[in-house]
Length: 338
Image (cartoon, rainbow, N blue to C red; front, side, top):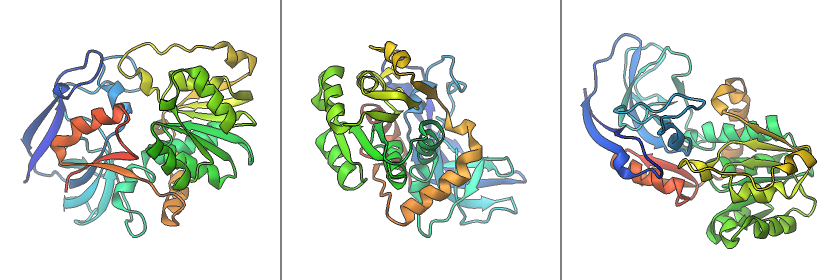
């Protein structure tokens, strides 16, 4: 069996996460039992939610255990099988973690899923046609539920979730406005992702300035907002929300290092009768088939052209992950292992 390089969580961060929180090790790959398959990972997914799991704190999921492989989504190829449902060469998506190989109990529900790479590249099953895409779909369709002609806003607009949100919004006849960091990202949002407008938050020193930019980009106000960031961005959006607007709260990257992220104007939730709902996409598996079908069609027809930031080699994962938390990625952040 092959040698398997793995990245473990070695110690928990105090404040900002550091490369020294992780440890690269080499392990033997165990022999397969009946019903198991060995998957060689081609790509592993880096996602902001992982930062929260590094903390030993109460959350929607158990903390990442110390001394164990960092958890995360993977795509790859079956290289050995003792399961009749999976053949050597099958392309699969799973939750193999930050390592080169994983042994999977393939009969376990949800552990592994075969994917078709005829029209959709394998890596996109970790982004636009995977968990991030379904996250965008659920927030837009099930929470925001905007009607054609209404205006929706998304923060981190050029990331894996935001870019899918933009394509899904335009497919529903909505005005889509993105918030992103830097002129290059904003140009990509409007020119390639189809956003009607994009605001560079880095040009704004405070929520008041950002609110003015939102007013110009959203002359009819904001009917729905998909929040990935929090902090100043959410403060500014709240000042432009229309009455009975809906906010899907997916991420709070401004607070991932444990700092408080207070709201400047919580009274606006009351005066505008807003609905703010947090959600975790893995708790809504019933929508995945419908969402993945639509997302796959958008990618296959060129209406969603996801961009990827790809780090090379397992050893690059910690640095790439920390860069993601600081917005250094452009599109979906992946680590290429082959």
